[in-house]
Image 1 (cartoon, rainbow over the protein chains, first blue to last red):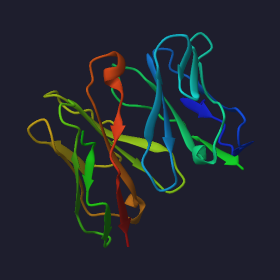
Image 2 (tube, each protein chain N blue to C red; image 1 turned 30 degrees about the horizontal axis):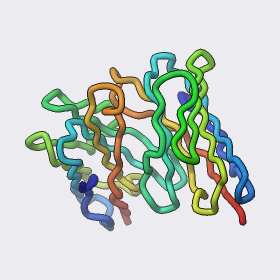
Image 3 (tube, each protein chain N blue to C red; image 1 turned 135 degrees about the horizontal axis):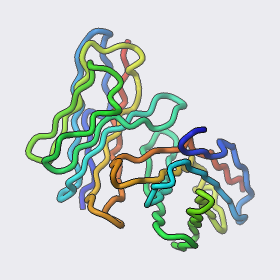
Image 4 (cartoon, rainbow over the protein chains, first blue to last red; image 1 turned 120 degrees about the vertical axis):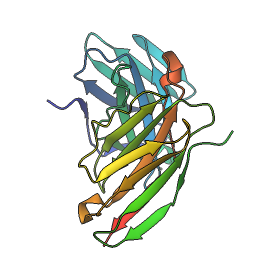
Length: 111
Length: 116
């Protein structure tokens, strides 16, 4: 079992739709969860952090965390072509220090 | 404020040569991380520095890789006797560290290393 599993996609959604990105993780000791966006040829950019079970909203982005199910998701509302990128899920345990990344989900938003 | 900076942005080297990659973290960030990303692959952890503590070197792929952090700020990743499989983008990140939002890691633009 991989430490962090994401559907590699590509996930294709029409402009204006909701994109739903999912991630499961194996380390029950994970405390913090981060979503990064990575455009082709660029470095990862932090877009969302979530620490407690439930939902966290920031603009068009909503992160959802369920520690019992070891599941975290990212919803992008009103998807735009500029949202087309690879989205990386990264659980974090303070005692480990490092982030463990999933392989990422490629999202394509078509006009 | 200024983000994480890395230099050079691109490096082409011949197999067998040594290379040094530099990272300048965000001012005030005590934790510094090196990752690498090979073409079409995920992000792979290499090494982690936290303050004055001994670094976590658990991700270094071989003894040809080493890193140091001087004065708790700038870090240099050194690859000796480079091999073609070392070709990748080397990414540096920094964070405040210490709990809650301070664990958020911010990445630099990366150094693309090509070994010919």
